Image (cartoon, rainbow, N blue to C red; front, side):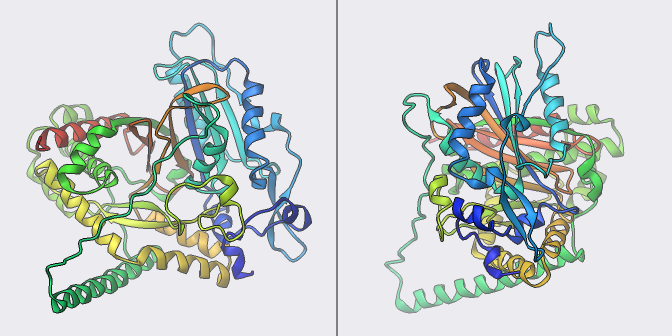
Length: 501
């Protein structure tokens, strides 16, 4: 296997027709018998979809010409190399229209059940690995719902957002594509008053921290991959086989302005704040679960959630190890690019799977401290990982592992890393203004990844001043609705504790 195939070198229709681009080892690793990941994007529309065929055609006409992978299948050549091979696309094979019993006032339960079961369904690998599911029924959230589902082998979340860039148009000006926030460079302190010796010592100390944290993170990742270290066995952690068990979906919604208010108080980023909210809410939820085991039922424990937990619960919380595996964009260029830019040869922000894992240890406290202090504690943990080069080095380890031992070795690496962590987190920045698909305004949208050997996945996306945390959880281990309530209550507690100027 050529090492070049582990990198995205750009895609062209000519290359697809002549020989097919090799499938890079990362894409093969997440499309194996051991690990098969799917990305499910849920669009909630303001109006019912009047013409499903036209809606599908508008999406296909915008996306397919720009990215040949949407019309390709994986196929081995004579040398046993797996390549993307161009094939004819019959859009009817990729379009599914849900039908529910008529006469219901609300179809929330039907829609949730359909999407939950869809997440576990395998793809037909004889056809391109993407599907459109239309649920043209009214719910409490929308007049109609569409699920755009594609295999993770086609690309990651950044790749999806570039697809949204080409298929959606702004509601206020349909001639324009969506606008996405751009990454702002951090402002470094100049230390203008420091002497040369002080600057030298500061720089030397920083370099020592980088080396130390990088060494610790790389060794920890390798030990986690081999199973030598892992998280505690807790009520929310199931065995690796949990990925095939029935799932539930729920979501928590936050105003971006509230998050910015908290951000200004702790001196971090919006990402720091939402992570702090999730970790704080997770503390509350675990207190409830541990209390339910020791004495009360789950509902009784939830009603007593603001009371001081018992000593046994406090001790159990304090000794527990809980890791959030955060997905990080590893592209060299920050911000979002269009598909046309991403599929160019040697693009700085190429299409495909270019992600790394950032394992963040969740602070486990028996007694919840001041909410703002907890967010600051979370921020300091994230800042410590930002100093490290561990994520970048682990990405190179995966690339060379694929070159030396093939994609199955990478698949095992990823599988073990996921299985030995409690839950996964991924975060995407969506459009700043309302957008529409085929003229139908999108009221809200969310996404989640299915197929990981974890009982809980959290996916975060922003859209028009709102941040949605999508919970994808195995029913046997996590009460998704209760967890979302804990997230919302955590945000309220943190907001109340935030000093007002």
